[in-house]
Each structure stands twice: as C-alpha cells, then as structure tokens.
Length: 261
Figure 1 (cartoon, helix red, strand yellow):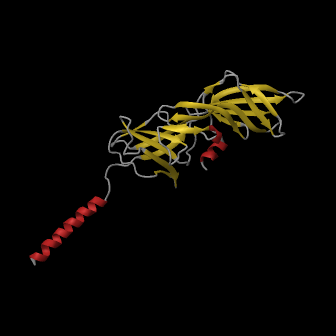
Figure 2 (figure 1 turned 135 degrees about the vertical axis):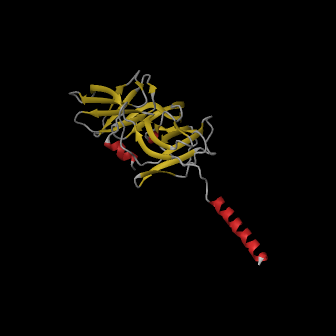
Figure 3 (figure 1 turned 30 degrees about the horizontal axis):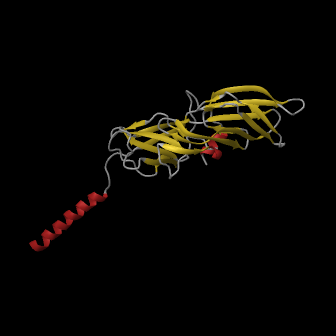
C-alpha cells in the first residue's frame, strides 16, 4: 500500500503547485472610475466611450511592465482596460486621445489633414499598490476655429498652418512642425497652437464663392475656441466682421457624438 500512497501524494502536491502557477498575479489591478473631457476651468463634459490611450511609466519615467501602453473603453456602464494592469509599484498614468494600437508614446505623430481632435491628461495620475483607482480628466491640445456668415452656409475653411508635427503627451509639447494647408468641410477647423505671420483664412460658402480674412499676428492657444462672425457687404464681394470672441473650448453636441463613434 505504501508504494501506492506515496506516489499519489506526490501527484496531489504537484497538481496543487501547478494550479497555483496558473492562478495568475495577485497584485491589485488598475481601475478607471470615470473619464471626462474638461471643457472649462470648472466644467467637464459627459462620459464618452471612445478608446482612450493609457501610457504608464514608473516614477523614473520608464515604461511600466515593458511596453507601458494600454487602452481603455467604456462598455456596459463601466470602463475596462484592453488588458490588465497589475500595480506592483508606484507609477504615473498619462491618458490621451485618439488611440491607435500602433502608438509609441510619449511622442506621437499628428496629421492635421485628418482634422481629429487631440486630448491629453496634462497632469499624470499617480498609481501605487494601495491606490489603483483613477478618475481621468482630458484636456484639448489643439485650437478650434469656428466661422459663421450671417444668412449663409459655410462649407469649407482653410488656413496655412502646421500640418504635421509630433506631440509629447507627457508635457503637451509640439515639435517638428511642418507647415502646409489645413482644411475642413464646414465651419470648424482644428489647428496646432501657433502664432500666425501674414496668414489669411480662406472661407468657402455653399454658393461656391470664396472669401479671405487676415489672421496675421493671431496667437492660437491650446484649449481655446476662436469664433468669427461675418456678414457679406452690399455688393456681396467682401466679408464684414461682426464679432470675434475667444473662450474656453466648450464641447457641443456634435463633438460629444463624434467621441461616441
């Protein structure tokens, strides 16, 4: 009997040890409670569901657990990571939008011809084994131009400005700016923050007629919306400015819908 019992006991011990190895890590997982786009100094938008990139580093700035890149999406009433983040040590979380599986943070290439908004967390969220839940706040990195012409429909905007560049999501810095023509369909245009020199904005109406307006010397700042209101003169050959306003970028319904696609 002993010859049978001893091997059986060894088998049970081996199986138990093997089961422990398959249980996975026991460290706490990082959780996201909420994710908002800050629309002003004191306000924020509703939650949105688009995948958000998560660049996580150690306190020393090295990628967390190898790559350091994750994403999070809002599904069925809760935020979920694309793969678990086991919080084994203190670190920093930098959130950003849009996210691509090909991203290599902290510096990401931008192509303004795509007219995609760019969001980033501005300040890193700390994590540690005893603090794993996050409330993510995202801020606008670009400037927004909004143009309207009284009694007319604006079908296009164009401005010579940085068309490609690199954006550091950790410090909010734009580098390697290459100028070109940035255009959009409709009365809204996203541009990289910069100071214009001798530039004119080209405005196209539904009728097909085009008009220009000088924005020479304008400093477009990150997170600000620049609204230009015009009317046509009596001869309908020139635009007359009615009002120019600069305010914090406030998310409208179209923008929220865009994030939910």
